[in-house]
Image (tube, rainbow, N blue to C red; front, side, top):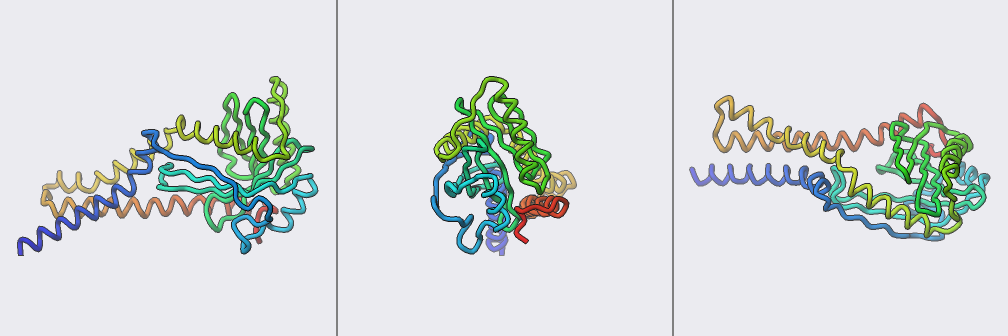
Length: 273
């Protein structure tokens, strides 16, 4: 009987430890600089975004065509040990326009959410300006990289906002590059993403601190209340791990829900409906 109890306690601790490691390892490796990144080109000539069952909405294609954009390729990015993710992928459908002096990118952060749209101008010195129609709360201002969001369903308005930012870089002596070729976009995206993973670690550090606090909370409460049996403490750790799994699921779901709310408030051609 004692052996059976011991095996049960061991199983509980192993399960709790595995779940805790599943939650803690990605942000920990990110903070330690162990993230890995890759970028590649897929489907250079097709019109589909994620496959034949998910074509770009016709209204969006019409607006892009009217603005002078032509399809260049589908670009896929992969990051290992990123924030709360063991692996995270982003698929972008890239269009280019020499006349507009920028690229257009269609993408989703999570499966099933309405499409996101952004204009990106790459400069000859490697600087970039990215203007999207989502996530208006994200505003990044660095010497060679601006990222901004505006909630609008009018691509011409979005383009006007983007060109305002481009002119600020031009006034500083920068020159936009050629945007009818994919190579400048790929090179700049890879360089800036690698730099972001290397230098922006406060987010995963905050997540790591939250995860560690929640994992330790239940066992600590039980310990200070006199519940110091190995089984009880193991169940406390298991409960904390399960709670983190639920929180992680809700965080991922919130990304898509936020995008749907943006589209409902600002009807857009990026909406699939």
